Length: 425
Image (cartoon, rainbow, N blue to C red):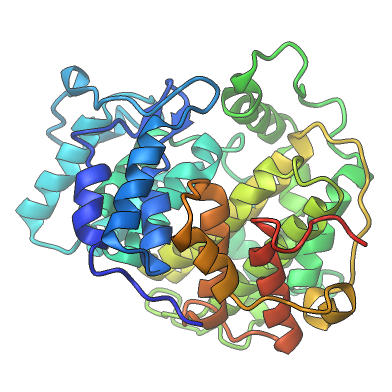
């Protein structure tokens, strides 16, 4: 089964995902997922009626008591120069003013939205973990759909909510690229899985950052998450940097790495694929023991997919930096989560015989039909099905590793709606 974009998607996005209608956030700290859900649905082939049904449902959906609210037109402040723009970076205010600036830049320079991303995104790459990766997700989904207005929104949100996992890297990336340390293996999906899984076991970050104690309800997820990342990054930056060394080793040894680091197009496709496959594996195995404990890793799946769709618009050096910042933030995020339970690591998914666990593995059409034929409005589950299906066939990633790998992605998709159970038999 392949993705099939609805011809009504663009029209519906203008109706439900307009920045002039709804604010990019709700309740002051929750991200507006309207565009993500519509794009995922639209690329699964949803009809115009189904897309509008989702828009109506999401508009009324409350998360921790908050629905999406109106755009804050009265807070709009004009930004005239690039220097003025930087005054709003990471300040969580004047989203519409930031978007207005980028819209005028498109008109002034007559470049494409993608070229605008190439020009302005490097300034905020270090802050891609802001708002638990939601600005990155917004931008990646917009670029995948090639929607001019949503690309402006995604880039604006990256500036609006830019937050780093502590200070900038202490690593000298260029120097380390030249260092062929034989003790460090290049990063693979399996290596990334075990790297994340061992973070808590190694206890390198214990006692450095607060968990949930004393943090008000939602701040434990959003504001508290960002605070913990900042503390962890500042107090244990060098320890965090140890976890990204395999990425630098990979950049030096990848078969498709090209010498022209400024103009290559696909040199990090293999590495980005390994990162996505490793995170999807971690999400699945973590969910098998407690499907409610994976908030950060759930967003890692969709944000990692989004990063893969952002990388083509960066230079080679910037791609390397983006992947490093991303994995560093995932490690910090997972280390900062309060989860003392251990879970059993399963076999490598593309070597695992899922037919012994599930005698009948549904094709992708089964969860997709469920999404399209019901009032299902959980955008997180819809997005996981969409990203898994895209991983099957998208040229953004390298080909699947085996038929068992395809079965793994089908299992993850079917588990979203209990078509297959999360619990192990």
